[in-house]
Image (cartoon, rainbow, N blue to C red; front, top):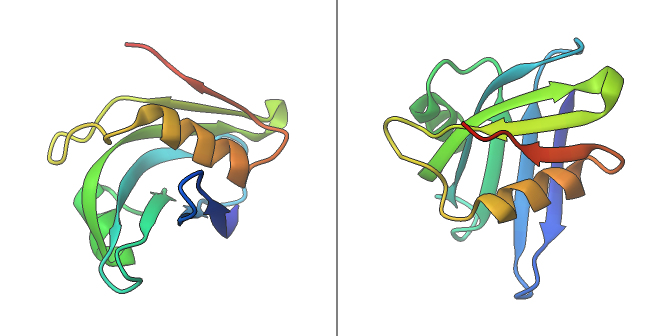
Length: 116
């Protein structure tokens, strides 16, 4: 699963969603929500299973991280589960927006927050 998609926001701005994971059922890993250092401060949600730490995602995509968490994609059931927080950057400012961005990037997937 490799995707880069611009998602319009209600305030007239746009967010960019980047999903980078091998083509396997059940990719899971960390995600970061941050501001792009190169794209005029655009809001970016980046999920990349190749990165071990949240800071690595920020560095790879040129982001100023605002927070993050854990994501699990279950492709055979078309589900996305979001949970947790970054120990370095904390939880992203708006978890509801994070869920909305995943839903917009992956139409037909059920996107849920896993409590705990």
